[in-house]
Length: 322
Ligand code: NAP
Image 1 (tube, rainbow, N blue to C red):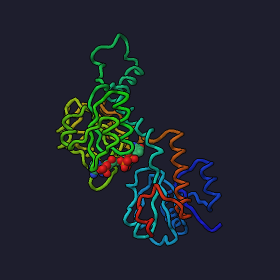
Image 2 (image 1 turned 90 degrees about the horizontal axis):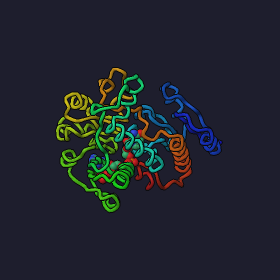
Image 3 (image 1 turned 180 degrees about the vertical axis):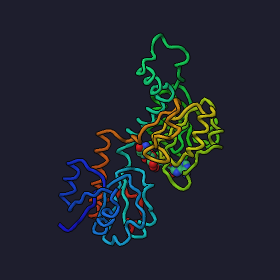
Image 4 (image 1 turned 45 degrees about the vertical axis):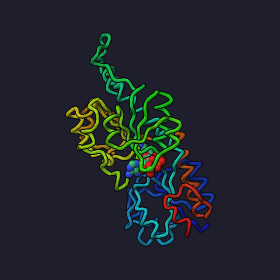
């Protein structure tokens, strides 16, 4: 078998076995950058996630035809550079939509009802009498949810919000999402209006040059001081320094965060010292079922692209015309 694949993330056994039916698989630890780039030079395809792939890493990788990322987000890649080199980039939309929307809702509920803070309070032995106002949270049902980036995951969040929690849904997108408007009563507004009216502001945009830092000090000031910011998109969509300040000053009530400018989040981050912050370790899609489905999907994308049969899940779709 001549075809060679580099796997730079651990794969479930059955998924790796599937790949081995189609190619020789070389498992590489991407932390060893020299070994990783050397392996890419001899590979037809690569599969993995959570590693920044820069043009210098694929210089001289002339056989490389496909990168298959086990994620829907593809901000770790220079897509134009891959296209110039004739490399197809595939990703795994859809299979992770529902579990990521669950994570968003977990953050909404945990932040509003102070679940993490109060569970810790109980664990520390502070529950000595019936609780009073000091432990109250705020309602979620019936409130206004503003979704910045109402696509696949944003749509699944809107469904939970509108049908499950009877929330009003506002959103911003560059194009209208008619399905969400028709089925969940979602209303497309300008960003300023969304910030001013929402009780929960939730980011679900991809990280691009336009979305980087889209929520900064000015935007946080436009939010209600009773509002909660939820970010399960990518850390750099929010200016974290501005967010820390807004949380410290009471500009906003709280934040539920799955993603950060720097991951893993350093233990010294001021966010970790705040009771009104729920911080998760980037678990958006992290369930056994979904991570398995993503790996399987990415493996099938890779083989399909190498065999020239893949028609969906291609990020640089202009490659199809070649
Ligand atoms: P999607 O279906 O492409 O949705 C993205 C939405 O963002 C679209 O509705 C898009 O609408 C909107 N958008 C894009 N650029 C925008 C801009 N400049 N201004 C305003 N809206 C903009 O993607 P998805 O599958 O829902 O995933 C979204 C992102 O979630 C991923 O890219 C990834 O970074 C993140 N994610 C995080 C986790 C996690 O573990 N926390 C898990 C999965 C995904 P228009 O094109 O009309 O603007």
